[in-house]
Image 1 (cartoon, helix red, strand yellow):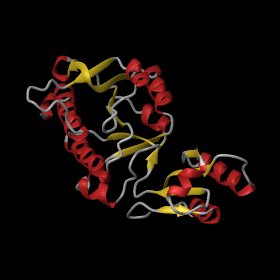
Image 2: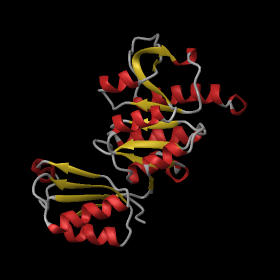
Image 3: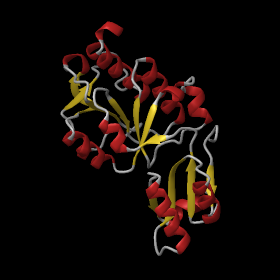
Image 4: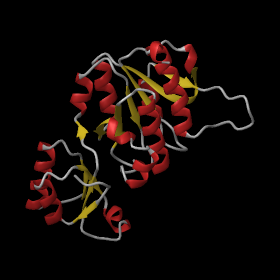
Length: 241
């Protein structure tokens, strides 16, 4: 298992990584006609529950290596969405497109410190779990369970069907301390700047806010997440707080 995130370029190296069981977070392939190696890679990824994302050519050009395929290695292993939802009784924190490595690491640290362990990460536009993330988490990544979420809306719909309540952190929601939380919940913490998209808000049973009294009218996602998670933990596990 790699001790830091790695990028693997080229069909043969990606195929070799899959055959050697190197933990991969996702595989990105150029959209279009697929050759035999691409199909073999996709089949192996499906067997191993590794998301495959099809991208336009500019995605690979921006990486400065035009191989039309990129695999992201990871220092952690990911459980399937099904595994996450099969184990009720513990909140799931869905981190939606958190792009700043420092924010991601800080969130991991807070989630673990407050006694939670199940973290769902969107595949697209989320920072990889790198050395920067690991350092910011102060080792918390070693105590968390992760799941890769390729289609977050589908995941949330599946969670609702399994009896989970969905909560989203927003600017306009109900104050966190006024909500009675249930253990079977998914908390969505949205990306820096853009937050949670409207279709996701519509799926939520409650939108949660943190009323602010000072001149600064917004909080960093890792700070806001910490406040909301503390409130959830205080209500669900009062003997621990």
